[in-house]
Length: 402
Length: 230
Image (cartoon, rainbow over all chains, first blue to last red; front, top):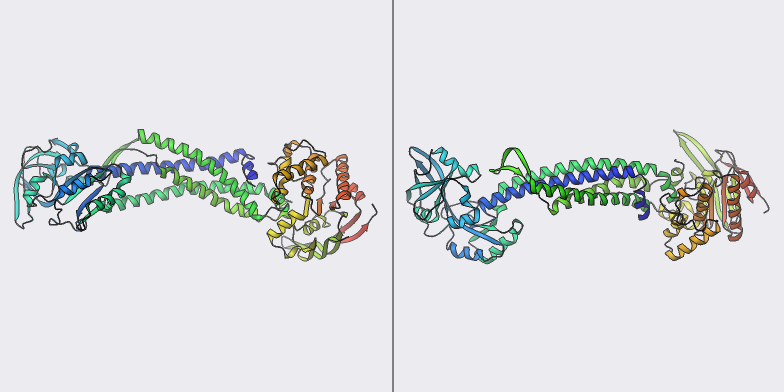
């Protein structure tokens, strides 16, 4: 039976080639679609996590749901040392957050005070690269770096001074004067409109935190290892008062928006495969119609309906498997080229506040496995109806056809 | 002799655009083992329909058919397939070889369905090819053979699994008279040697002349049933 199915492929070569082409084009388009989407999301996630939030964050339990000045991490340095010991951790950095008011001259604006450990922040999120004007923190006290949007609103620039007013953990009003030494552009417009970076020691002094921090951001060596590293850090810290969260939990809304976008991709892929399936159905129906007499003869000789059914499905499966191999080569090659050269967008676009100019694809297992399964399943699925028709052929009437 | 085929009131009515067409009208017939019988009659008399019905390829609208003692109407689709595979060999007017298979593969097809081991299949194919005069042609494709050679392959395919009955629908219609006579001689010889039952549906006077029983159909009924001496 398999021999008949295999040799039937070569009977109407032009039709087989056209059927295979439909599958190959469908596979390749689907593969590039996924590779492109994986590449783009990988870039977005990488920029979002590496440059900003980190891959994993450690907080006091409940902080993420309801951030509070008082939910602090005690002894962050020893915790950081434990985190550094976990396999796959590239860097860690402590942070402090508080809301306050910032005044430059006669302009006042609500700000987000972010206390950072300069050395660790540079290692973890390349903080130094975000400075567009001025310089990064020196060893001097009371220096501030403003987000580019905030600087614009306050009409502030390097060399001017900013007064910060906030509340310390002791309940008292805290205020101090800082020299603006730099302007930073994080790539996230919302952050840049609010951020006022201070050295971690200055932030601790202002907020009366006494060596405590609100967050430890962790950078993993590879994105796909985040779940394992998260579990390992949790085990290493082993403190019920602390919460270890991967980036998907930290940036819930960003992650959900991305997942929703991927659902959109799924619809696109399904439309491609539907077009392919209709083409395949048409050619398989045609071939069953042409071979009606032959199937009638096979049945007359004692071939069971299920065996005739198998011949039709096997023939389509053979074409699908061949198409998948060729499609995989085409898809992987295109994705590889696009992963190296990318495509420059005529207009930059922003996603999750991150600005993109060039989009790159990625060669992933998903970009080959999903089209392979889709092509195979849809080809087999559309062959079921013609196969059923062939299996139910009445031999006496089938042999009257020409 | 034991009966191979028994029919009782076999009727077959087709619907042609809602108009009933009576192809067979209550045929009662018994065919014994080893007969060399021909169903004859004008076009539309019901020869092929009767052949299809007694071989289980078509279902009668009414009446019963016993083949080798088995009532065909009691069999499911799969059981009927198995029964045809093991009991009936078919020879068609248009040869109906499977074009993608070689001569050997066409002939061994039924034995493959019967799960006969490869070595035995090969041996039997070579033996029957010698018998039908096509020794050495086992690797050819049907398209590489003449009409007479293709019909020999079809006969070899029908006989290789040694079924009790061979049903041949106009086997000589597409052949010239010389080749037709040769094939007929061959089938006659095999019938005499093996006691295999041969039932032909034919218009060919040569087949009629060789048949030891002539069953003449007219308007779906048996008009005459004539048994002749060999």
